[in-house]
Length: 181
Ligand SMILES: [Zn+2]
Image (cartoon, rainbow, N blue to C red; front, side, top):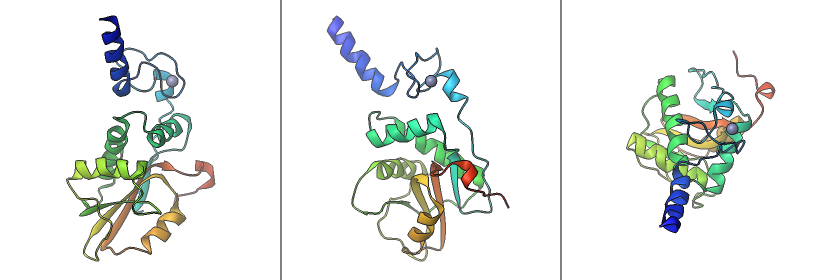
């Protein structure tokens, strides 16, 4: 019985870990994944609706832990959570609803964490993930981190009517990258 409880507990840990993902301290009641203190560092990046790319958060400690967890794929539910952040951001920006979702990946067939994240975003929007786009498509490109030059390069290689790009955070520290107009 004890063993069974232990197995059940470790199974639950996959979905709702007891310890903060970032600082490993015990998580307070009614908090999930991150402790109260680390959640304070979840700084939303102020979106600029005139740009066609955006990131949800600034590039700092606990957010980088989110990235690491996605890459390691230790938690099944992490992709759904990050996808939810991206979808909320998309609505905040009032961008057009995409026709197709495209993971921003160098090698198209490598199903990495960006593919897994894109899959969850695709489920939210009820739109397909495609390898090939057309000039009639409103395309939503998904990435873990956002690098403006990489996005420009990616954009130049695919067809689209309109294109947008969303990521969890920028891949540079904020001070290095001035987005204000
Ligand atoms: Zn913490």
